Structures are given as structure tokens and as C-alpha cells.
Length: 86
Image (tube, rainbow, N blue to C red; front, side, top):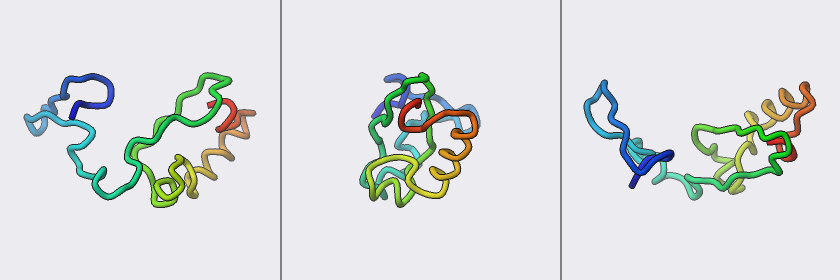
């Protein structure tokens, strides 16, 4: 399986071997390791998350847990709506 951005594996100089999105094995423990983009993208803001939480995985959508609440509230202070603008 290839990495996220290119078909090539990225070599980690610290370990001297290729790493891909499946290297850590997290994908084996979730239903939705690769979630589809959400939102209307009105302000063309891209937010990338590290891995789905339990609530994210259960809902099949990102930012459904307390981090999502924090992110929504933080963005709202700048007149940015996560679903509409990102």
C-alpha cells in the first residue's frame, strides 16, 4: 500500500526503512481508517486530523468527540463554521 500523498513510500532516516499510512497498524482497529472529506469548503480551509477517535469511527465522520467540539468553538470565534467553511 502506498503513502497518503504519493505512490512512493517515504523513507524515515531514523529507522532506515520505508513508512506508509499502514505502518503503525492503527487501520486494523477501526472501521473507517480513511474518512471521506466533509464540509462545503466555502472558505477553502483544509483541516487534517491524525486518526479517528472512537466516536468518529462509530459515526463515520471526523470531529465527533470533544476535540471536535473544541475545534468548532475555536473556529467559531473567527467566524468559521467547520461544516460550511472547511
